[in-house]
Image (cartoon, rainbow, N blue to C red; front, side, top):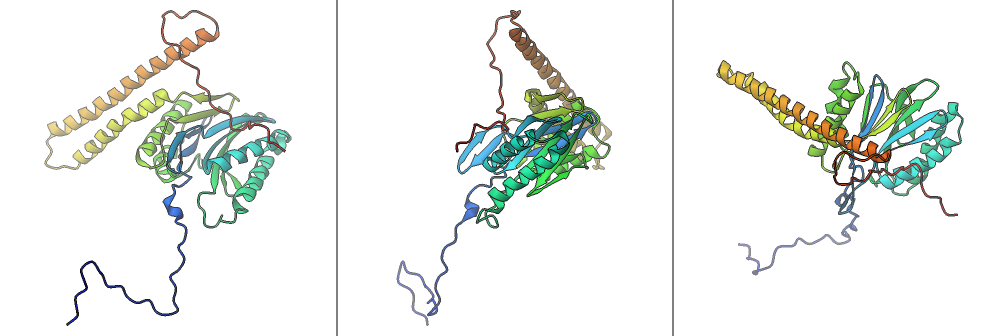
Length: 333
């Protein structure tokens, strides 16, 4: 009969002679990923749209900042959205933009690709831990408006490569899979108008930020049109619309389930239809109300810029600014 162990002691098997315990390895999985982002590009009949969230995570801290920017280049304009290691991506686009500004119009894309490739090789692939450290890589979605062709093209990077996008959309970041699933049905027939593209992008961002860890903050949307105009779109009414659309999604699913119930009476099924219709009316009313508020803000800023008195007294709203990541401070040395 085996002897019981004294109280407080446990059996410890003997380690074979000559075998040492392996040295502890660094636990990289303890640290948050640096690709906690959702960014996407959509093309429509009149141009292209870049969108992203604004949340950054580093260690235990959470901050917010721009992930979308644009700059003038010879013969056009370049817009970009980034995901992954924000510090490396920002440095790469700053150096590439300097190189592109010195190029001839017909060599802009070639110089952009060469500049991004050189930086990726220098910063990521030359790093001694690039095969094991997944916090090093970064990705870009690029929009390029050509003045000679009056058209906006979309491109995406993958390590040292730059490829043209022909599917009409592309997603990067940790929210890529869900965003692709949400956007794909809209491109069966294509997106016709800019307004539709903005709504689809806002809806996708809201669902991803609500479901994927590491994606959050407000939405950023950059429109680059084929006529050469561009706009950083105010996301307030779009975010509100996307928030209100959550109830519509829920009621639409309830109606779909109710349609399969054989024991459901016609009156009960009509009740589900009425609930869905009421949800759609609520989304429409909230959208119109937010659009009216936006129009009042625009009128307020227009009168302020022109030095005209406002019809009513109210609080002074500061003008929003977004840093241009393509214009870095001068380097020392």
